[in-house]
Image 1 (cartoon, rainbow over the protein chains, first blue to last red):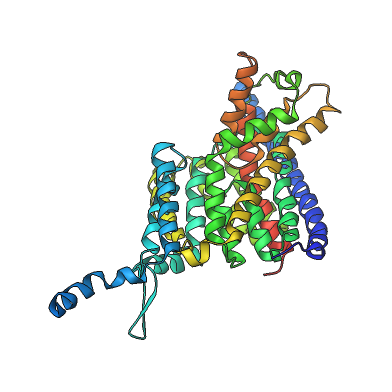
Image 2: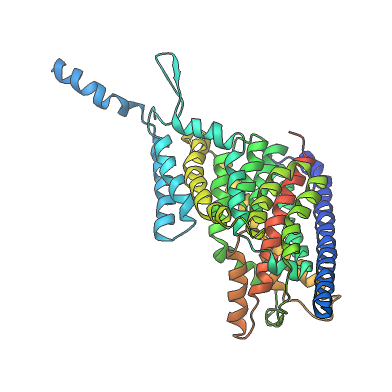
Length: 54
Length: 381
């Protein structure tokens, strides 16, 4: 086992793809949480309005 | 005299099969048991692993497969390994328990925190390159890099998927560094932050998270991760299945079983089974030391990745973030969150960072699984 510069260079695109990939997937999850929070809080507000109207 | 020899030979004949390397492994096993009992370092895993290391390194040990009179006799630890780890069953079952233990509430109230979980996976990818530079092949380099996730089950899953020759060393490193979070992280955080930054207060706004959000969250995360990193579906799916059981509100008994009985049972078998890869001939080599070093490297750069990302965001934010919370983006839960919280209190007794650091810490749990899945996707088996 010794220093392997060729393999190191081969891993650089993998590192870049991995880091971009993780931020993309995380970004989509964050976006979906915002949408989910918005949607469920609206449902809750509508329900509260309905209850008040009764 | 001959009668005495005939009497003693069956009793002591095996002593000649003892190798000095096996004795070294007994000492390593003893050290793991000492760390578990005396230093309270991940005792649920280090103790069974330590004892297992002694068991498998007895000469002609009956707990591992042996050839007697030309026939293979199955050993129970190899049997457990083949039926529980080779097929990734144990780490996945453990993830159900872990999922049932995690409250994603702090993350759901402040989803932005997930970015730190992503940033803190930097060390994994950087270590992948470093391990390749040091001469490990791509599969072993990927398996070693995952140590930086500070996520035992994911480390086992990835190393086993790539059939790494260094599974034992990788698992020992992953769990040891998880236990060493309070020692490894503070100096790295201090080195990268100024006192002024460490004093930044982050008031916590309590927001209510609806039950529907809590139920839909594990399902949505599974679907999204499954689409982008299909090989991570098993890991994320079992983690989120455990969380769904917890949050659905109608399976409290199952949730309780997953958190306690299931997690304990699997942990009990996991540690001793991993010892199957701690045989002297597999474990005692210079690569093991290099793996321990690279694991530490991954861990340090994960911590640095989270902290530096927070500092980077602060360049654009009006309401500054305490960069220390970025360090909680590793998945060692909840140790990392507690470390950051304590460091905040040490600087300012009124600076309560716990809820933020917990949010980042649970993000790290998800992000490390995604990182593991991406590595499986990007590197061919």
